[in-house]
Amino acid sequence: MQGGAEAQASSQSVGGRRLIPVLFASTLATAAAIYLLRIGKGSLAANETYSAWAAAMPGMGAILAIPTHVDPGRELIYYIALHYYSLLFGLGPTAIRTLSTIFALVSIGLVFALAREMFDDWSALGASALWAFNPVTYIMAERARTYTLFAAVALAQFLMLWRVRKRPTRGRVAGCGVLGGLMLYTHLAGVVLVATEFGMLARDWLRGRRAAAPWIAIGIALVLFAPFTPVFLSLSDTLVYGHWLDWIGTPVHYSNTVKALALGLALCLGLWFLVSRNREDDELEPVRWCAALALLPFAAFYTGSIVLRPLIHPRYLMPCFAMLAILLAGGLAHLSPRFRNLAVVALVGIFLSLLPLEASKAQPWAQVAAQVASAAEASQPVFFEAGFISPEAIPNSGFPQGYYTVPFNYYFHGPNPRVLVPAYDAEAARAKIAQEVASAGGGWLVSWKTPRYAREELPDSSRFHSQLVAHGAMVTVYRITQSQP
Image (cartoon, rainbow, N blue to C red; front, side, top):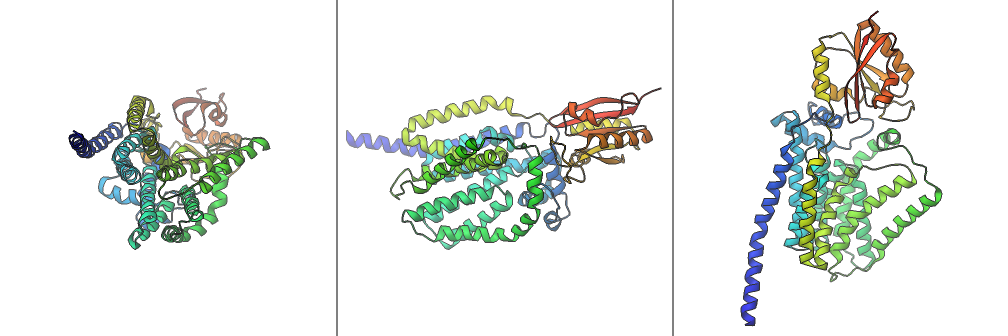
């Protein structure tokens, strides 16, 4: 009887293992279908058109030389990848967005591989499902931005680091180092991820695990990133000043008590990961590493946001969401495999039910271009605001070409003059617009401000007629004409 029960359990185990590839393939196919369902709908957002603009450069050298004020080289690897991808598929909205879809699908495979190595097959399947249908993954999988690439590279780097930590070889050390350098060039938030790995390796060292291979891998990554460091430092003043003004948010004045409390809690969290027990036979060690990679970068950014000023948008730490998916699946398995399975099914169901709500409101660039073209007034100017995207009227030199000229030029190729006005000086902008419109007989104002604040730049209503013709997420467009006598 006992032998029969063991044989049946073994048969079920083999059957389960055979089912894993089928279920994973189904997860991947379903995710691809969902990502591609609406990928061509809606105009590109302004930041997506910057990706297209960078990809349209004549070659890698031109991309590396892009003089950007607010993102100094942050997306170099993505811009280069998109450049060569666009040579095959073009620079249309659907074409450039599908590269992000491809990287998102690759990241699902990497989540599966990493969770399988750290935990087990069923946890890997659960983690890949949680990641595939996560709202953050879904949204970024159809955006022409670097974030799915960043997630894929970071996951590949951590998978290699885990293997180096367990079974080091020269090839793995070199591969981990190269992937680490690539991660840093893909997005500067990778610095926080490397710092977290550094802390966890220090924890290994303090607890007696003195292997040199992981440290060498991290060292290779830092050496590869070193050539970019002078460039970053030379532009850091502009970067910091720009983010001090931009859409992430202006400083919130917390009390010193709140700042001290936030800093203290963050330090306690970091110290807990650093000094907690560490034994190689401790089955919770993978859970600790996943928790560190999922939580510590967020803690660092949000503590900085309280102590200094807002620093983060959640998409900056997309790899941490992937590690959170692995943490949930693997951690819950330690409580109960059945509970893990039920929790994964419930969460995936919630994620899928949210899909209709997750499509962000498209910016109306195609509509704006069509309206300007339909007016058939080639001599009338289109006004753009120069300066950082800021709610504060602080003089600055950000985006001297006007932030919205790039998305407008992506959709509109007519000869209308593009005229710049200062975003931070409504009075000067109003005078410039009045002068140009009086000369040309009409024009358009394309603003990142809400209508309430954009109206401050409009000329005198007794002499000019201004009509709101388009309004979307962070985009307001007015048609301005001379009033009839």
